[in-house]
Image 1: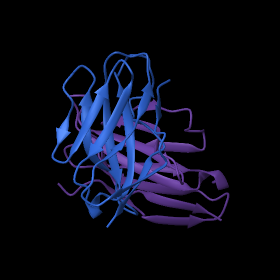
Image 2: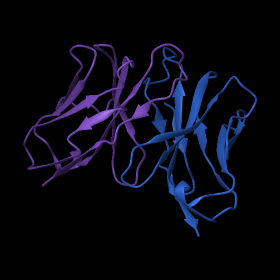
Image 3: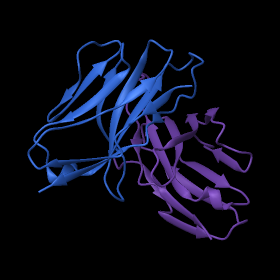
Length: 119
Length: 115
């Protein structure tokens, strides 16, 4: 079964600075998808960024970018110019191929990293 | 696009009672997922529908849990004979068929508290 590990329970960054959240995963599949979701307090989960494993180019969405290292099974999220609205729980998630036998079609999430933005 | 809607937002019940939650996905989405999220943890996959067919169930979905999507639109998740360990946030998500990297859109969740 696939597992996703987020080793940082909590991270703190000054407003306007850059922060990197780490994520590692374990899988035997070669084709899969990785996601970062943001969950503000008492609010719904929102997709931040996604990456297809077959693409070598790292995904970027405005201030958010990833460092995808397939061989190392690492998928970190970099947030540039941090803003107060970025404060939330951030979850890394994995999704494998549908009929690979590797598990459910649902997402496998890490335990999350609580990001605090210091004004 | 009104988003994924879940009802109720909060449910408090006594141990042993049955509860039912509803999820209305985004209208053009034919895939619907249920997750459970306990405090301090990431969501855990429970089950998944494509249209009205329930295609996968995780081992977390005990026989006290049943999910339906009778017409391929809204879905219900029922928990029978609730236990203290069922206290959690129950999240519903939906996505479009086709390209597999289509993201799942989540609802606000139903928070279940067992007394």
